[in-house]
Length: 225
Image (tube, rainbow, N blue to C red; front, side, top):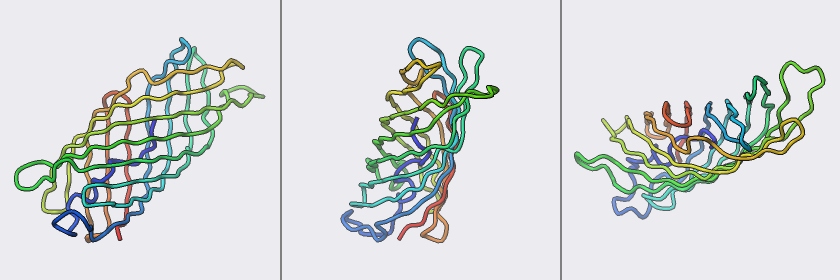
């Protein structure tokens, strides 16, 4: 379960900086995004459905024309865990993320651009059982290591539709009825599509939908300088 930060590096595919790839003209980017996901977990032999919504602020540094480093801090807004006919509310929490994106193929001429990424994220929140007058609080911790591949094409120097595939894994720890349970996501993959738009050269926006595997939608905006 990673934060909804979009595809690292998409917004800078056509940076007008050095043609030799050593000094991008806009090295930094700040961004904000919202995302929601749903999936199924396997926790100590139990099937657990999960839904969560979160916001994230990100800061990107372009080390070279091809390499982008990203850090993010955010908040878990709300969510739900369901298992055995019981429902648990996910209370507000926090998250952080680190990522690296690398442009494998430039996308010049008729060729598409190809981006690879590696990211690591953790989130921390608490849950309370819904419909219970005095519900004990239980901690919910997730960790996520994710490998991604994005293939797309920049059109008219501003529109970048893309396809995305990601593989991921990481532990989930929770407490159910006073018993510590742990495990991970049932699917360990995502397949979807998105669109990035550059506005006035420095402002960008993206929207992404992932219907296969861990289901997710996200959108956000950024400013490069």
